[in-house]
Length: 407
Image 1 (cartoon, helix red, strand yellow):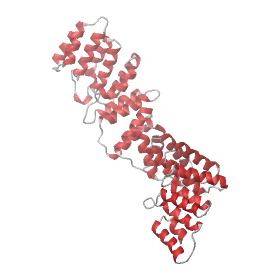
Image 2 (cartoon, rainbow, N blue to C red):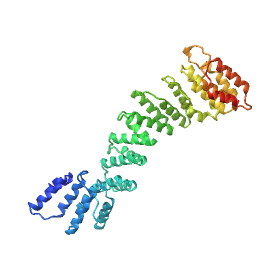
Image 3 (spheres, helix red, strand yellow):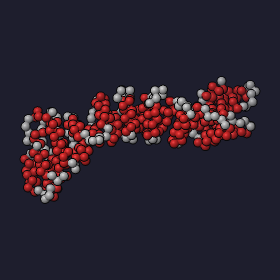
Image 4 (tube, helix red, strand yellow):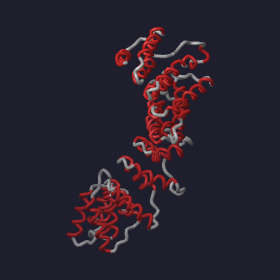
């Protein structure tokens, strides 16, 4: 009864039974009583590590020598009430006494090391347990993953999950996957995010919150993983998420970070964005601009892609047209920039009928920039652009006058 009560961590009941054995039964204090008194301190609230030190000192004073059971009881307590020095002393004592560390004892040592954030030693302990053929319990691996994720050691947590995921004998709780996805996507750890998304989210086993999904999309964007990015975007649609600009910006960046960059899909996303309640802006085209600004041939190819999308009934946002003009302005190719401007009326929505232009102030400011960057600066074209601006009743802004002065 004493052993059973102590193993449950019932401190008061253990003490009562020891006192009963001594006072009522006339039993002298022995190693079994002290082992129970030590072990009951596994209780997280009523137990204490300092009490173990007192009990060991008391044993020494009455001539009781700790045995293997005592040592394992201390290791179990120190895995909960952390005491690195006491654990080290006990392990050294066991080596000197040639006591064999049991499987439970090895689990307790590893758990204590993880809780103390001694990750290198803890992982070494896990590897040693595997090398010795021990079956590592799921609770220890779960504990390791949670603690490693909280500490930002996503790579090590991913390795543990990966090894468990490959083993059918050690199934992982869904909450563990959820924690890895949460912390992994927040840290932009591509491998961890992709593993959980492909094995848990896509089959519908877990349903991450919108914030985690946004982090996963950002992770895919950084890694250039178009498959993951598309899966996350589709998940947003299934959730009925109200899309924001950041969602489209990250998806466009995802396609542009693939190897090689997927221009067609990136431009396609911008045409889808124009179907929402907001128009694409210069912010959503930055990843495209960074890639196209020094590649005239690809700018021309982009124009062909845009024309093809228009023929398919896609609405071409003015921000996409402005992107091409901006690239030509940086390349000091005023002629090509003006050709793009003169093609704007051919890219208006097919169902809207003929329109002279859908140019905005950003369009004219970029054309004026092209006039300034031309060699020499072309003031005649600048005058023509201003006349077009006035004819279309587009309101100039401070940047317009600034660039006119520079021309």
